[in-house]
Amino acid sequence: MEGDAADWRPTAGPIALQRRAAMLARLRAFFGEREVLEVETPLLSAETTLDPHLEPLSSRVDAPGIDGRRMYLQTSPELAMKRLLAAGSGSIYQVCKAFRGGERGRWHNPEFTILEWYRVGWDVHRLMREVAALIETLLAGSRRLEPATYVGYADLMRRHAGIDPHEASIRALRRAVADGPSPIDTSGLDRDDLLSRLFGERVEPRFAPDRVTVVFDYPDSQAAMAQLNASDPRTAERFEAYVGDIELANGYGELRDPTEQRQRLEHDLASRRRTGRPLPPVPSRFLAALESGLPPCAGVALGFDRLLGLELGAGGIDEVISFPIERG
Amino acid sequence: MASYNMNQVRTGLKVLESGEPNVIISCDFIKPGKGQAFTRVKMRNLLSGRVNEKTYKPGDLLEGADVIETSMQYLYADGEHWFFMNPDTYDQVEADAAALGGAEQWIKEEDVCNVTLWNGHPILVAAPNFVIREIVETDPGLKGDTSSGGNKPAKLETGAVVKVPLFIQTGESIRVDTRTGEYVSRAKA
Image (cartoon, each protein chain N blue to C red):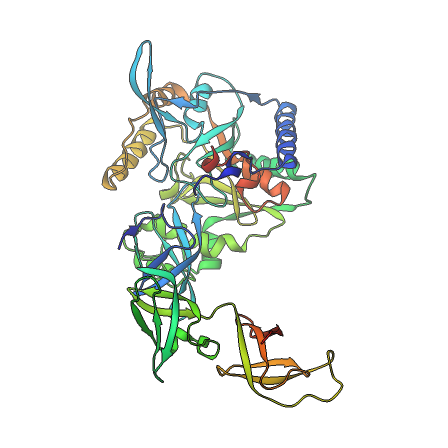
């Protein structure tokens, strides 16, 4: 994308800018009524995610007392917000920028606005209902949504992909992916990559365009920072919320056990090492916060730009952000 | 030829897929929040014209295809091949019927055509968008029918048959849009 004379102009029109401001105000009212505290945490931190599918952007920071430290732009405010929770903040929310290297497409920009919140003392199902309520409330001015639907990950995969995600062999998964409408060389794809491909290709397109679909009980191998289900440890207390096939939010019944959290981070590091990706340090302040005690809580992150895009009926993220990466 | 990674792939790029040249017509970045990124690429096969879709992983590479579009002058046909010349270098290439794909019914010696070359061989020849051709055969129009109402088939000197207004006669030259095969106007002789 070469620069041209019109590059200085925003890609979002004046209506999108006004709607963004109005939606932010409604969002703050939503949490204000519910007595959830708005917080800010650093965008730039020495600690970052080790998730093998996220690429943090980093910078060398020089300042008095800080000599050439490698610091990371957050991929989400999760680590810092959990440190606040462990310090006794109570329920909190934050709306801020997050950064993910390598992500650019119709609904992706490497810099985007994220809404993240945590509910102390809530279980994951209660938070799922609040996520649906928030989406419905913020979209109420522009579209009338049918009541939200809640459905298990394994049910969806069995119904639409003909695959039991817990039992299927990797060969069966490869075959199912290879039979899809958009062929792919499956070499180098692991079990979760294949499941993710099947979910995206067979399940997501089935979601109704006029309602929130909440998918829960993801496989334990995709738990990320969710705790495992006590009743079925093959699954984790992780959920995602969609409107149509647009992925809006990802939430957890939060993992609180520091030992298990450390093991998952080591596992992620090993995966990054295998694939030759950058190796940020293990986030020791975050782990220390878990050691000191994270209260039982559920948390979720939501792509604010996409929600605004749904309100405006936009065809992509560029219509709702002032300057996408090519014009930044 | 260069290889392209998934950050370099874009609309209009010419790449090899299964050994054949393709032009990319769209690419979508697909990335679940927690999961592997993919790039879904739609491409048109430049030999068959068919559109195919494939999904690639971030580490995958696409091999560039040596495909260029260039203006060449049509020289002559020998019954099996059509010969074109690069007006700058005087290099000549021969195209087969598959590459002409119907353009042969419009073109005439010295026409400048858009020729797509793959590894130096023509795989696609496009006739000029507008040509002026003489009518060699058409039914005589009815007397008094000067402008409106109906049309009739007319055969051009190059072989194409186009629908023309009833008043157009054998021996006249007309202007035709080769992309639609439609009559545009009478041409001054």
